[in-house]
Length: 301
Image (cartoon, rainbow, N blue to C red; front, side, top):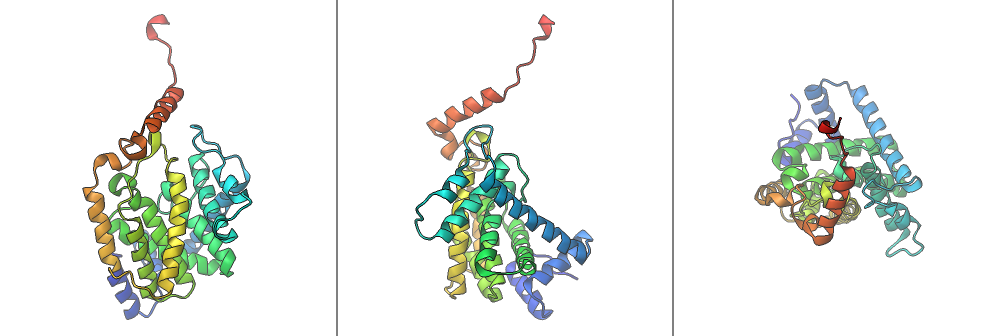
């Protein structure tokens, strides 16, 4: 029997009992539950990571102007800005997260990891991480498997959907997945991997989902960049063995509880938060009007 991803404690115990790394339990799960072969799984991971890298490149080289006009080549502007606030690497990181998410907002090809609304975080993080640390593709693919296991538990115990748990469930989950994957790829222990997830959740807890005009553009794109930064800070903290104090399973439970108690207008309905501001409402009216297709009056035919 494979581990069915009920909680992080069980995942760790299963791997210890069977003397296997975290990613191998995810492979077993996929083989058992999805009836997929190991070869097909690895091929799928290679394809997914290729699409992620392509999305980053597309967002930084092609026109990324959304139909609403709210997205207008922001990633390239950040990437090419001559002054770095912290370091060039940090500038590249957030530019890439913006780039991949802008591709999604402009109807391009992305990997929903775990959702389209958070599709810039793992590409921005992992492509930059690989470049900085020289990690080979195989190890990155293992990291993606670990991130998939993290998502399975978060989906089971809380949510990964903004409509259910707010933006904490989407960008928060993606950031947690990315943080855990980085720690794993750098040889961190199981406890360090899971601590990175816990710290990330603590940093993202309570974030609402309030898309302006109901489009996954504002503030979704910039939140992908900030979540990528949080993923890196959480990974750094966890690698240094600084405890998040609250165990990861309890952090996930807290995320689920916050999501359940969050009012409906803060869960992808475009009725609260930034979507309800004066400017947000004006954009909504403009976007809706321009998207209405005027049909001929049947009486005049």
